[in-house]
Image (cartoon, rainbow, N blue to C red):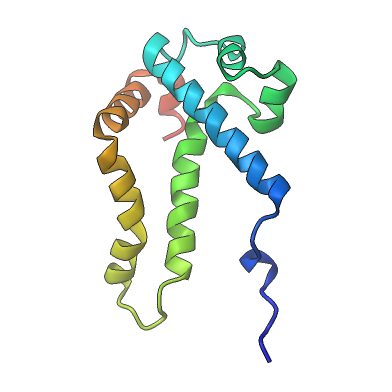
Length: 132
């Protein structure tokens, strides 16, 4: 008899998948604006205009402008944690960590310039330095 998946193991439903997609899309557009105009110069209204959403929709997905930048790091950590949970129990820790981080490393390697520009923006922007 197969066991039912635990609550954390269940696949997200259509609504949650749509929410994640919208959040990712708005986040990506906002990050591009931050890189073009600067973090401090980009307003929530600018982000809403580019994303084609209202302010109330923005705040449904992000409590603040800072959360857009923080979500990039947070989602990466969540992906690594989930990947680690899927590694075999008898795998050496460093091997498991290397395997869990591989997709993330590949992602950033494919976007080296953008990753460097975002890191430089984070270092140069006082409001973002506290998120590190």
